[in-house]
Image 1 (cartoon, helix red, strand yellow):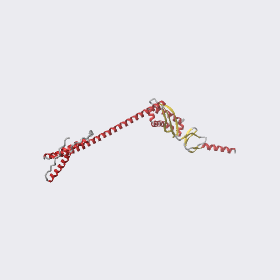
Image 2 (cartoon, helix red, strand yellow):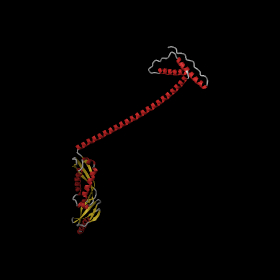
Image 3 (cartoon, helix red, strand yellow):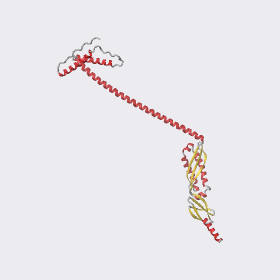
Image 4 (cartoon, one colour):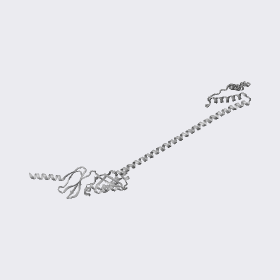
Length: 318
């Protein structure tokens, strides 16, 4: 009975030492008498008991390494505090297990040194504004160095870039001054455009007013010309009548001037008292002369003898 139990226990021990199950996302190295012979992939695998044994258990999943914060001196002698994160993945379990003692620590120190190298070769303004360029340069350098370790660097990201407090305050003052300068420039540009628009409006207004005055002057001149033509024709008619010996024409002309002068006297702004002539016989003579001149014109047109209007009475002395 004891022998049976012994062999049962030995069978269980042999089974556990010979049968291995590798979980998903891992790979195990196999060593035979201390020498690497192969790699076990996810699933069940069988080993030779007491001859083969498991070596390194390597995670094939992507891992994240936090790069510690460090102070870096830039090209223009400014001190910047920098930290980063690195995403790595083991591509060859055997190389990661046997080519480097601790691949995570190796990648971490490689990142620290290359951050100092890349950031130290740039000015402060470039460091603060070209973070994507820094990430790309770090990725290229670190990935090339870790290829021999069977590890691939997937991404390198700068988490924070922190200048000193006094430098941050100086940058804030500089930014404020720059924004105030831009605001003043924009305000000056706005005033300039407003002045230009006002001048353009005044110019257009002056042009329109000048055109209006020119049009008004043209129409006034045309009206005066027509009035002069009418007066010239009337004077010509009166002159023709006078040359024929018609006294009524002379009376008509003088009476018309008399009425016009009296009307201007009555409508003058400077005249407060209107002097009415004592003898209004001149007005009656004017009316009679007009009637007689009209009758004479009608008679001449009809072929009758001309009619002579009676002479108006002589004005009484004032």
